[in-house]
Amino acid sequence: MEFTKHDHVVFVLDGSIYLTYHDVRKFGTMELVEKHKEEELSSISILGKEINDPNLNSDYLYPYVKKAARPIKTVLLDQNIVSGLGNIYVDETLYLSKINPKNISNKLNIYQVEKIIRSAKNVIDRAIILGGTTIRTYQSSLGVDGRFQNELNVHTLVGESCKACGDTILKTRVGGRGTYYCPTCQRENDLLIIGLTGGIATGKSLISELFKKKGVPVIDADKIYKNLLKTNKIMYNEIVENFGFAIENNEGIDLKKLGSIVFSNPEKRLLLNEITHPHVLVEMNNEIDSYRKKGEKMVVIDVPLLFEAKLEYLADLVVLVDSDNETQIERLMTRDSINRERAIAKITSQLDMETKRKMSDIVIDNSGLVSETENSFNEIFRKLRSD
Image (cartoon, rainbow, N blue to C red; front, top):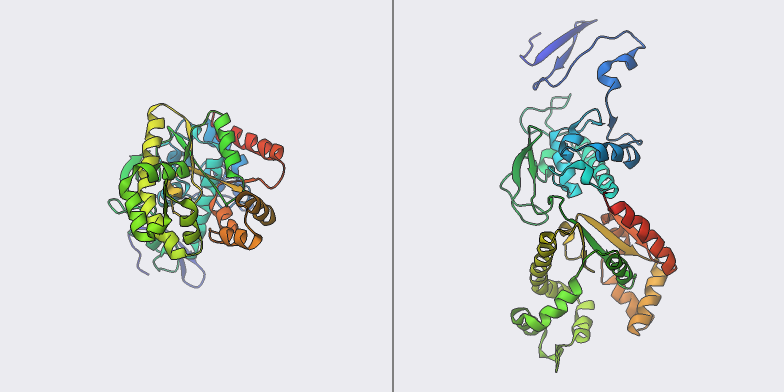
């Protein structure tokens, strides 16, 4: 029997069978313990909950996060808090959570911790299915390479473009570990950006007003768009060139005429988005930077088509305003003075609500009384504040 330099312990079993402890990076330890006294192992008794433990939830993790004045990456790598998350998987978890690895953990709110847990479970589940991550030396117990490295978003991808926003992935060191992240998707936590969205006629404007009453600035993408139609000649002319002079009236572009075209034609709707979104995005980012310079702690970006436009990377957390389908239809019929068929057509022109719920971090049900919605909002707002 031949052994390699990384075979540190060998057990000789009956029948000339060898059980070999192979450890390339020498991270592991080994202890001898009497049978039925495994719980006395010091290396096990101090371990935190594994990421797939059903009891690893925000009730467990949030207290650790709030009392730690350390970068969130070092907290997640601490095996006394969470066991089983290594360097690769923490980088990938924080990317999916839209959290900068250098952010101090006690500045995070409970929704961000919940997002970390969901992201980590998804990362680990996927890595298990693909047999782990082989970057240099790792192989499974069967001696085969893993395949999760083919789905990495940031780890080892320094200099490459982020899949979500297109910015360049950077590498730094956190807690002595090489760390990869996207500076746009994973901003530093001096300003919490809330993405507010919802289905048409679900009552998003109510939640927007409630944020304003709490003193939180709201950046309204629709208002920016309408203002640009008056001030941005390049965008205006490109819309007219592609949709025809018939959409114009004495005051400029007739939004109802333009809307009737794009609601019934997905290709035209995509074309309009391609024309307008880059201009709107520039203005939104300018306003976000302005509030950051003013020292604001929280800002809301009100974007009706946040998911459809693939702009969710702009927000640290996404709040979805939801309502049951029948309420949504009736509200839209009343608001726009249209029949049921037309209302349903408008609703189905957007991404379906079930998909939006899965993509959101916080869902506010606005199907009932305004007072009920306000109560739900107040509880959510309390949790959003990390202090």
